Length: 360
Ligand SMILES: Cc1ncc(C[n+]2csc(CCOP(=O)(O)OP(=O)(O)O)c2C)c(N)n1
Ligand SMILES: [Mg+2]
Image 1: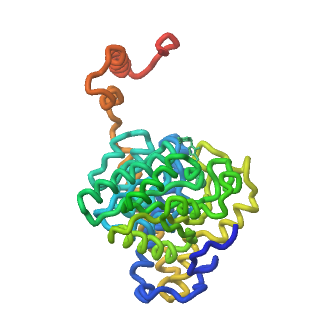
Image 2: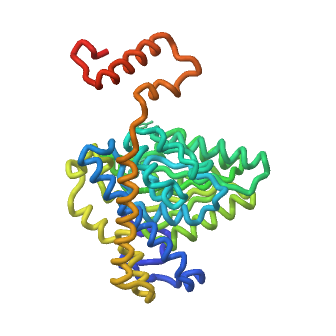
Image 3: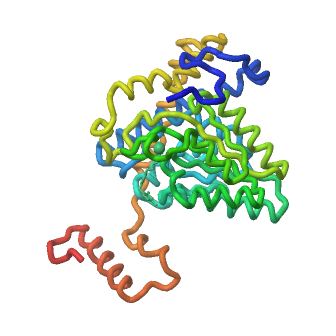
């Protein structure tokens, strides 16, 4: 992996060039670190819940903390986040309660409807569809003359889909206020970046759309903030879209249903951990004299407690009635589904047990 074009910190978290002036005040960096640690604790708990049968299949955020936290902190409350399935850290920063996020990953759609999400969209699981949704939202902002932006994230693999290129194209032609961020974590499940695209940089995909594209170190919160801030500014000023390729690494399996040891080397993973975004920011904060072991322990304790409380709340949430799964698909339920719903209600009343003949 070559060095990304925009970078302020080396792998050890030491400044490699002069830092922007705003770094003289540590508040933003400390806030960023707080959320990155919280996100990591949220993630570890999610994996534990899944492994003990208390959560559904879950996509870990490990390695994407700098991308997501810096992005969400740069956004204005009135902007709209258009996420894919790995943007839990963005959602935490934007105010989605952690218990709702566990609800969603536990298969309960109420987790997708937090009032705190405001106008942010729910997770897009069909790859790259979110890029087009972001363009639709940004078109509305433009037509209404609102100074707002849609910020959408996508994986490296997702950029191979037509939807992504179509979205970039229309965003360019219509000068839409969209910030496109690629989380280039080097893998699309088991497909490595090198055979996903022949483009030298994924940021170069912006060229054909006539919009600026930048390749940024996605493990470097300062580079991320600088890139997202300037892309948002461009969007607010009516100057259109930007594509940011955030170069990072997926430190986890693809999801809890995956086993990455089957297709990637442990040496590659070990090298990637050397650039871990969380350690990197902690090292910078120590270097700047803003962090020490006592503060670290206090933050770990605080965020672990917060996550535990949210997990308890999630576990204590009574499940929805069985018929709720039929409730949101049709204005009027077709006859065959009415029959299935009635059958499910009766079965639930009988205690949920079923026999071979019951299988539909
Ligand atoms: C339209 C569509 N095709 C296939 C899939 C199955 N699928 C889920 S994740 C994934 C790989 C995505 O990789 P990438 O875009 O790099 O994102 P990452 O998971 O690495 O963050 C695929 C192919 C899907 N969800 N949607
Ligand atoms: Mg990927």
